[in-house]
Length: 193
Image 1: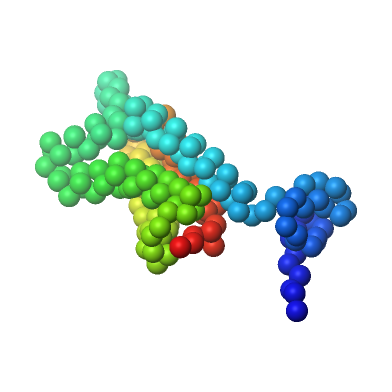
Image 2: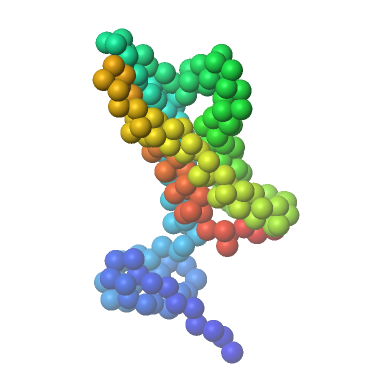
């Protein structure tokens, strides 16, 4: 007995029989794309957007401080160096790991998963699923810089000191958002031997 598989039209929501080859919606006549192609393309688009946003996130200031009329801008790496020089070694290491290395690791992991899915790289399914799980778990740690800027700008309201988020904070927040979207849009059912 052959089981019928169904697929939903993304335009009119009609349910159609899934068949081999091109599927045309019986109601509106639009081409229905399989989830594999859409998932891969969406993941690649989100990943490329995140990688592009990573560049201005590290080049532009993430924090702007105005103190007694003097404006000081600091990037992520500049803030890490300032914390290191001030003797806050654990905080500097945590921000370095969470804001610089975690996004790069996520880029590498998602790229590997995409390549292994597209070209059937020979590796263990369990290892690929672990890598996918790690990618999802470490994603929220990238937001630590944005949280620090938000907390500082809300808590510090002296007349002589003003702390504002910079362009880098916006780019960094968007980069983390698109990296998380790329991980969420990746269909883990595509992981094969």
